[in-house]
Length: 220
Image (cartoon, rainbow, N blue to C red; front, top):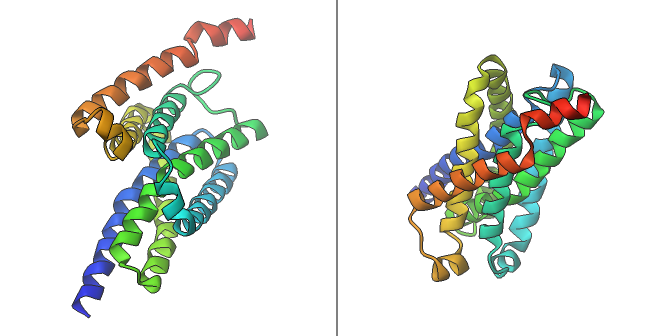
C-alpha cells in the first residue's frame, strides 16, 4: 500500500512538471486570440494532448525503437519556440479563422513531441498499474486547461514574458536531445550544453523565419 501512494505522488509530480511544458506551448500559441477562440483552441489542444498520450501509451514500445525520435522532437520544439517568438504579421497572432487553426496546428505539433516523454515517465511511475496510469492521464487534463489559460492571460498582460515561455520550450527540447540514446552514443552532452545549443538554434530560426521588414514589404 505504501508503494501505491508513493507511485501516486510520483505521477502527480510528473504531471505537474511535464504537463507544464504543454501548457506553456498552448498558452503562447493562443495568447493573441480573442477569449472565445482562445478557449476553443485550449480545449482542442488539451483533447489532442490527452488523445496522443493514450495513443503513445499503447505504442510506447514501438516508438522507443525509432532511432533519433527524441532528438527530432527536440529540434521540432526549437522550431516551435522560434515560431511563437516571431508570429506572422508582427507581434500578434492573426485573430481570424486562419489564426485559430495556426495556433491549433502548433499546439498539436508540440503535443506530439512532448507527450512521448510524459507517457514514458507516467508509465514508469505506475509500474504497470492500469488504474494509476489512467489517473495520470486524467490528471493532465485540468493541469493543461488551467495552466494554458493562466499562461495566455499572463503573456497578454506582460508580453515580454514570451521570452521566458520560449526558454521553457527550448529547455524541454534540450532535455529530449540529452535523453536520446542514439544521439547520446554519438555526441554525449550535458543539459546545459544542449540548452545552449537549443538557444542558438532557436535564435537562428527566428532570424530565418522572418524579418521585421518582410511584413512591412508584404503590406506595402
